[in-house]
Amino acid sequence: QVQLVESGGGLVQAGGSLRLSCAASGRTFSSYAMGWFRQAPGKEREFVAAISLSGGNTYYADSVKGRFTISRDNAKNTVYLQMNSLKAEDTAVYYCAADRSGGPFYYNDYVAYDYWGQGTQVTVSS
Image (cartoon, rainbow, N blue to C red; front, side, top):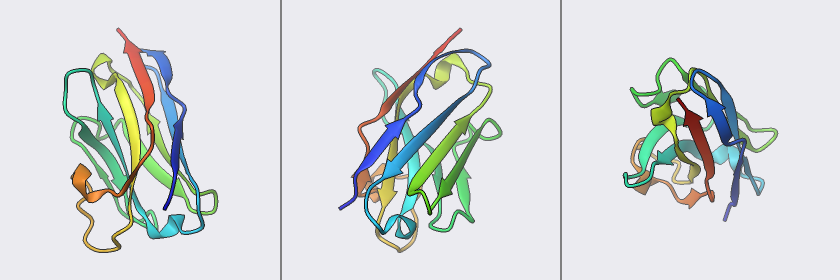
């Protein structure tokens, strides 16, 4: 079992930046592939970014490519999402998630993830 706690959300103007953090409990963080998803009011949860166990591979939704960067620090049991050039349409609750399977990484499928954080609100004002 792993617990995930997101932080770093808030209110920012369009064009601004935020960095989200997701701290994981336990000693096996490095064995989980990690992802970020978001959900806006009235919309389905959507994939944002993901990162492999070692951090050597990263994946992004087209809507955030070039603006967001996912990274991880296995020594600190933390995954980050640096968000730059934020837009009003980035407004959502952001969730981090962990995939413990160790198998093929279906990074953009929320069903593939085993553990989820409680979410952190990001609001971008235009």
